[in-house]
Length: 349
Image (cartoon, one colour):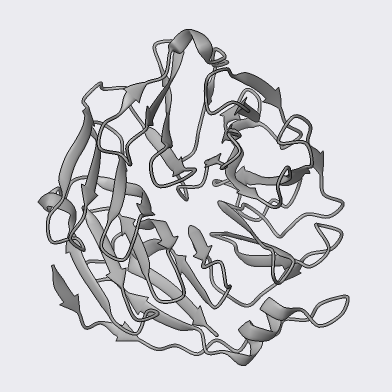
């Protein structure tokens, strides 16, 4: 591990105006200073987990991870087990010193650290040439699931019951068969969500934009067709929880970043049925988050960052640049965006 000294404060003048009343998260963005940290080596960053208002872990290509303990004032940057050829598309924080990272592509590897990233233990490896994990999620400190693209006619899901120490393959026969073509997207590490009540939703694209759904902690599964636009490179790139039974999905096409059509939908019955929002954000969206305190939906992608204060009735495009993924702490005091060429965008209350 080493301290990366490339810390570049950049002030973004944000012209954010809500069509309704003053918006808490918008007010914070307008009043705060958005800074930019550039990770040495310019890796592509897609994994981010804001653990609390001071701690955040990020991950990306070239085996890269980074951790902050002081609300992004300083960062410690390193390589996960010196696996510099791996692209870690997702990372999950268990604490300020413990995290687990997932790589996409073959070989697929899951590493865990319990000492702040000084050392990483290999807890899963799969060298199948067709393996491609898109994301993982945990419903608590012990139970998690990771989802790969199909392999020889079956989705590959693996699950853990002990905080990622060991992983077991979910029975192929319990999961709906993939369409042709169909797969997930590893654009932001948010294509699967695992809720504490046992609801698991995994988004796909291709022939259809489907949600592979379980409501019993992964014992049984079903496939739900969503209204998001489907086709080559189209589909569901991100899923976010809104409330106890409500969720949002977002996507589009990474090859047509300014196409703003049928790219976000919501469900109020744990993903059984989905409805497109009345209006759509400005283009391809690789990540969606709901901030319950501010009561806003936020989406980001290579086109930029948009938000809605009325569940998609209207959308406002901010002046922020494009990012791959984002996360916020539960108090909504710290938000971190990650993107290409080692870019990390930060705001704090």
